[in-house]
Image 1 (cartoon, rainbow, N blue to C red):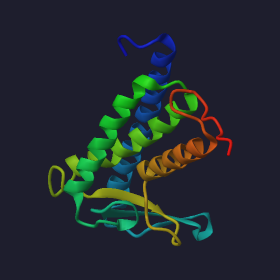
Image 2: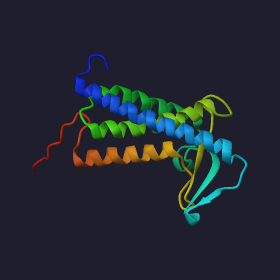
Image 3: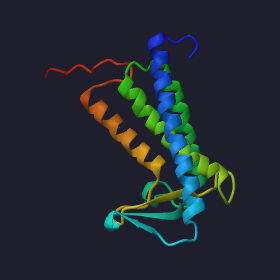
Length: 171
């Protein structure tokens, strides 16, 4: 943050705080799931609307690219680097939260890929939220999806990362 204006520094702290919150919640919930649900039957909640399960995913969302953990780890690292480089231009609190969600989600799942069996950059991500009509997911996945949806919404609205608004073209 050195050299950044006070407003940009504040937004970088917001981005970082959001990411740390997501990572902390993701790590805590995954540790709880592994400790409490591994090898056990799913826990039914809300009349069967939600089940808590313990599964491992070597792919991306919806089990796309199953078994491509090295590639997915490298993509997550690229996302982390891109967000770190972009943070210097933050002029919007909304974008700071959006990027914090994406960063936290990427790091949360990357940590699984690095530290879980069978080994570094090949580990399977712990997924545990089962809606029965959707692939099983975790909090990091949720943060990523919400962050990406917000980014798309902001772009469609013409809200730029630097806080400016896109001008409408007259034609």
